[in-house]
Amino acid sequence: MHWIDLVIFVVYMLAMLGVGVFFMRKNTGQEDYYVGGRSIGSWHIGLSVVATDVGGGFSIGLGGLGFMMGISGSWMLFTGLLGAWIAAVLLIPRVKSDPAFAKFFTFPQIIGYLYNSTTAKVAAIICFLGYLGFTASQLLAGAKLASGTFETLDLHTALLIMGAIAVVYTVMGGLKAVIYTDTVQWIILMLGLMFIGIPMAYRYVGGWQTIQETVPSEFFSFGNLTWQDLFNWAITIIPIWFVGMTLYQRIFAARDVKSAKKAWFIAGLFEWPIMAFMGVSLGLLARVAVEQGALDGFTTAMDPEMGLPVLLSQILPAGILGLMMSAYFSAVLSTADSCLMAASGNLTTDLLGNSKKPRTHRSEMRLSQLITFLIGVVAILLAWQMNEVLSLMLYSYAFMVSGLLVPVVAGLFFGKRNWKAAVTSMILGGSITAVLTFLDLEMPLGLDPNLYGLTASLIAFIAIDKIDTNVHPEIINKEYDKA
Image 1 (cartoon, rainbow, N blue to C red):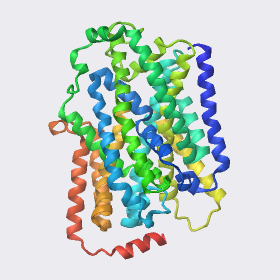
Image 2 (image 1 turned 30 degrees about the vertical axis):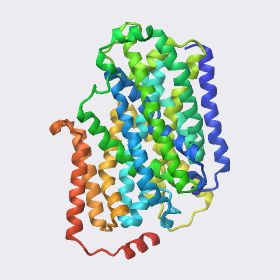
Image 3 (image 1 turned 90 degrees about the horizontal axis):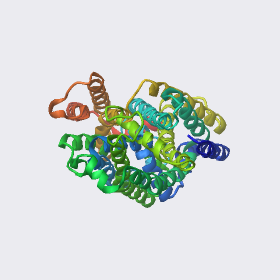
Image 4 (image 1 turned 90 degrees about the vertical axis):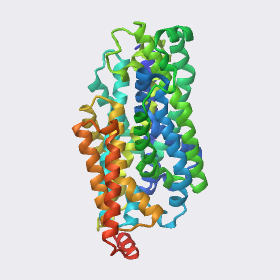
């Protein structure tokens, strides 16, 4: 990498840290730190949502899918559009218009209000573990970008650098820093992909005719996938819009129902088709370059997620490479910071928040920042042990969905209040998905372990709810409010 690229990259990273310092001075307590003062507009939230949801991990993952299967990989983010729009119609009016949720910071607080404090703690543990894994996946994505771009930089050193930047500016700035930097980062990424990355890669590989002659025709078909691929993406990604802590934080941060719904419609449209096609197209172009032997030392047998950063590092001229890498690192940071905030919010508010000793705003802030920092360190250590970005992301999503979807839907939309059913459902669903994933067993029909975890979660909830009918919602809610 030329020194000009390095200067551009360093200046960009320093600017992100500067945003963290700015909002550190403006934050007055947890209300600002975790939900941005509940006064942020539609476009900022919408761009922050899509930057968080797509982010660096899905950007790298989409590149890997484009490398392996072509444009059919874009269907993965179509499920994101469906999830966003369904949540806008069903979830946001239910959550945002209910005065009981007006002072909440986290998703487990909603679970606690619907059931009881024990249920909230179980939900918090599931959220915390899921977002810890998701944060690690983003840091790994950034490390892959860096090591694929800087020839002298190995993966683990890159991971330490990326992790340090993401953790430090998130610790300092809180959710306002996250949302406002997400807006800037998303614009940089979009402009970088549209006007730099895709056009230059397209010219580098020789144009449309050469592309058609180099890779199989199925790479240009929307049907180059199995129904299991689409089903597994759908059952993991659509429900995350109903249980994702980062998404609830942004619902809480929106001014009102109308602003939040508009933000979700904006996010869905940017996910698919815009980001989906740009991501898989770059991955497809990387595959063409590899087939032509144009990428030094890279073959189709190597990690497909590395094809994209290697392609960009070899085709972009000095100055432009720095801009493009800043765009991609923007995407990484925009997701890593949000997931880190989610895990921190779970631990601070839901698991440690019942301290009987009152805290000042200053002590609240210091505790929140310390916990955010420690979680970031653990996420870096977890990423150190992993190799594949997309798999780690989808595993984290699946664990949260199978553990949390049934209780939240039952409580919010069907008026269920059986805390024993909710706790059993969460533990059984999440555990089954985690165990089946860890054992890497081949599931019947090639379906995702998440399906079996969700099924067990639903059966457990229905069975216990029918057996144990001694539930008093008004007592449960009063007990949770008191706690």
